[in-house]
Image (tube, rainbow, N blue to C red):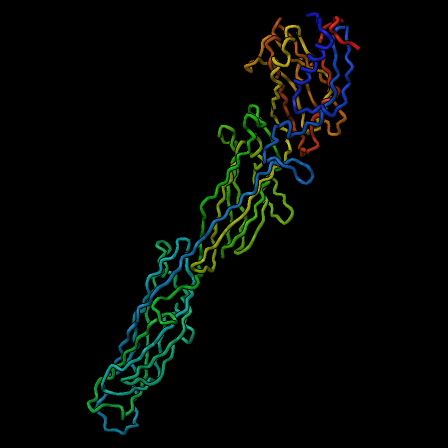
Length: 572
């Protein structure tokens, strides 16, 4: 071992140079240091003092990480910003036209009359007449799987005209118009029309129509082509009276034309659909959000393949279903490592949400919930944070399938907010390492590495982080490569065990020695890498008060010390 011959002033500067090598995050400025230096004997000892509390955020180097937060109790949680998502469900406008239905009623012939003007002649159709009633095909959106009812405002205009010169006037005693059963007429069906018709004045009657009911006519809608084909028959019976005075001198056939035309109330041929009662199925396009958690980068907490084993993760989903149909949500959550490798994946489904309502769900492994949320249990949910993720991806889908009433021209919105909360609560499989580097020792020890063959750091350490820990180290050169001939050992030659001490009453004794095993090796020293390994988490949530405190730190330089009291040395 080398015998140290130094001036007191130079030795003190060298020791302060060593002190400055301590991790700069340990603020010693406010600590009272015992500056009594022991000289002589086998070593030089400098009591340094104690550090402040080094919290988990300091240890994990996450000072600038926006996702590591604290709740109202000071407990750490990983909580990215909430994600807002929405999907619109547009409904097209629909309109259609009907073709007029023409009936030609032939009551037979009437001879030239010689009767009195008020003499009555009664006629009835010998059989029911029928005619096709058709509308344009209506092509509806693919989301409509079945149509039960279509609502619209329309009128059926029945026009009765004389089509003969045999008479100048006819009294329509009863014209029965029998509409198809699917047509919603706002009167009795058959509809009754009565009144007089002359050669110059037709008889016009209208009835209101409110829509089409297809409950008993499912064959009119083709779910594969999404076409609604409306076609059927209108049937009529008619009884008339002719007065003798209205018969022409020639007589002839008694012919009456009847036209049934279904149009809008304004008279337009285009009829606008106002509502549709239908079975609707909607699957929105997936919405994916990605979060770069920054936990796996070089300055993050990963050193190798670490295991966080965080338990108690939850995803809170606040949903607003603005659609007129019930909806449910499904999703996929994936975590990825720093090289893009997938670490874990879970899927989830929400219960059905009633139409035009809001719901609140919390997804977790145990399904617990409070505060107005409904719990959803997902197996292996905690696997998302078993290993250390660098990125997390959340994908949502909205699915709706129910009977509902939709309004054409509307734009329904299904939206929600999703937020992830993961308490920093280490499980028993916790296994991660954090490296600290004390560097630039070549400059700090310039001129003294040749006369040193070892340094010893002694003290106590208290850890209130709810996990066990160890401390080990390695000496590196200016290029960061390990140096042969230098060992960093604890007093027992292995790593230092730092037990969990929740009440800070169980400090661990530490003694770290940096010693040459090959003569001159320490001259190449430029840095010390200290590796702290956390393992066997207790399951307790880590709080901002939890941390590591180093107490009674002392730097020791082995070897006797001779002080040269030369005339240029100030000694009081």
